Image (cartoon, rainbow, N blue to C red; front, side, top):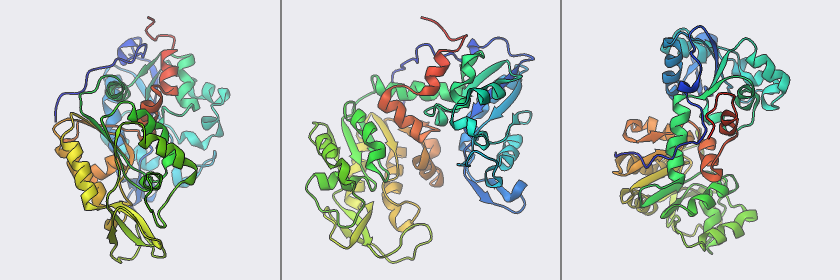
Length: 394
């Protein structure tokens, strides 16, 4: 692990120190406590938090406010309720864990129990800010959504970026600015359509781009290879071909672990062993993980990098038969001597399962938000904060 890349300040973004004296004030904090839950008969509501990474990330901000005498109310979404109360998504298990970690913070009910949250309804914004004197956005993972709790409060309340959100912008902004080179990015996941924009943006900045996961098969077909029955997006073949011809060094799988197309895979699938092909997958077979040669090539690229960014699994990692590629890449990122950034979601979870989280320089709390920031250079939540009445003016 090494020093972070050069700082690229988020111009005009108000920080906690830009708030008025919070002693005696009621502060609304938008957090991202959309965390995984597991069944537990002894826990509140029969469920408990399975991974508290996002809760822990918000603690420095919550403690800063409490230590300065603020009355703190946190608000978050959880899951995807349909705009009405749903007991499967109530905040009781999250509230219980938060109380253990930082007593004294009130956590309101799931924001998405109201249709006004995702619709950014002004009436819901007014309801949210009622009785509060200031606002803090500590929900980087939700800041790519123009939802009521993200963009509404800064219109009227003195507002600030929380500690974690500010650090997210600093680190990811550094990747957009002047990262130490060589800069290597690894991007995985299922759908090329979901990540094509960030791949195009990264191709303009990185020295090496490693593409894995199911979306790699669209690139392989664009390069003239056979993908068998693997997931391929025919609507984006031309875009992938253009990216392959862009001049950036793109590493694609040279070997693939595959299963016969009629065989089940996933968390509860049977244990039939996969076969190794490479790089062409024959008809009747579906590629589900990168092979050992590919994992070694990706790992070598990471080992030689001064800056590394990783987002997305390299295979169907919830099925142990197809988790080796993601595990190998996670170990390579953890062992890298360069500055390492992992862009949230399944990648952070993989590091946690392997006990490698503390061997990476920066773990983002937002997968989708980190990708959008790298793709566009901004987020709706950041735009809203810069327009707050107390934001620094240039």
